[in-house]
Length: 615
Image (cartoon, rainbow, N blue to C red):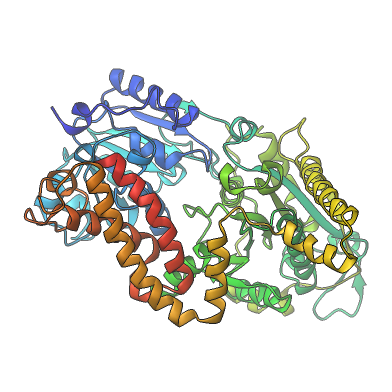
């Protein structure tokens, strides 16, 4: 019997899995029992556990190995993070599999992989670019057609492209499962596969599986357009008589003046959220038209005092990796992107979305909205209505209200909507001053607010939660006044109470050390991390009655820890597991900043709890 048929995972009655994941799994299992070479489609909104579903889908379904195909590197990293045992270890942490011996073998496909390594895999993950049959190193040229029994396609709306079709035809006898979070296409082609499960975004939003969603559009009382080579100033109505609507919308989108208004409002919204919940590292995601436009947007945010990181496809791999690390380490409050973050990247603290580009593709619009929908866990937040209440901001005149209307009402999701997406290149952006209008305007105002779910006003719920926090704060302050404290002491106490941390006093001391002696702290923390890992391993082994110098844990961990020798002692095995987990999350220990080293220490406790369950 093969791995996926032999191992019995805890799925159907698993309280740690989400209902949409379990429902989709049941439908998948039922479908392939009656359609052994069928092609199925599952729609699961972004933030609901799509990667988790991919992790559990093969059990009781696949008779051999499973191939997971992703559309790009960022999406692949997100899937690897969920599937790989040395990353988030989804199976263990969600109580799907209890023994390390039962963990699947998961590898990313590399062109120099040995066939013997591929044959040992249960999951093989690759992005679509490594499936191009014209390349000798393509996976299609290195494995037989029956090598996989199940092919899972992540982000199925891509899979009608030629390379995808070629790959699916090559593995024609395999079961095919398409998974997507955005069931929209902007062309004349249907989504592939037979739809067997569809969880709506409105459903998971009502269940609080994802952030709530609201929008705030801004506008100006007066907008005047100056056409290159024409001295006259035109109102919007006047300019629409002589120019196309697309030209007007692009002029506004590329205007520094109108962009600054969106920037100001997004910074204002972020401050409101952070003032109400100071311990959560909320961030702005700003989406630009092109790389050069993104650089300007980043510059304008920096001029306002924001800490900014920019991500785009022209960055060197090491620069891009560092930018992502900085985002994860909360070294910025604004992330500016073109398309790099639009698919597959999940950072739960992206809460304010500022859009500086017009969209005409519902799929592209849905993708970017999805980036701010991942919910922040309850144990981290002040109030769901504050911390998990994303806000989308854009200028009303760039034409996104129609996209919002269609998206929020979900009335067009099953229709084919032929559209031509607006594309603004760097060249077009550079020539904007001679192609598009310059804009003169007066002060901006909020022209419209809306909530994603009809019947639930997320804007009002946010204000109610914020008012409650302020009311509780004022009540505590009044008690201090009644106790006879001076107004100066009361004001000092007010800030302290507002920023009161849910973390221990140790964290405050860590921060003080960090600010005073960062390099000394870094060296000391590295030593402490090494000592703590070794000490924790000894404690766990003693608890379990396992001899540290025996080698019997090898069989449990040899599929998880790479290049593990059979004579490696139990304590050495566990230390190597810990180091590998920390490396995957924080990078090489020698290159970790003091903040990352402190985070490593805290995360060590999470890993130790994993080990207790594993052995």
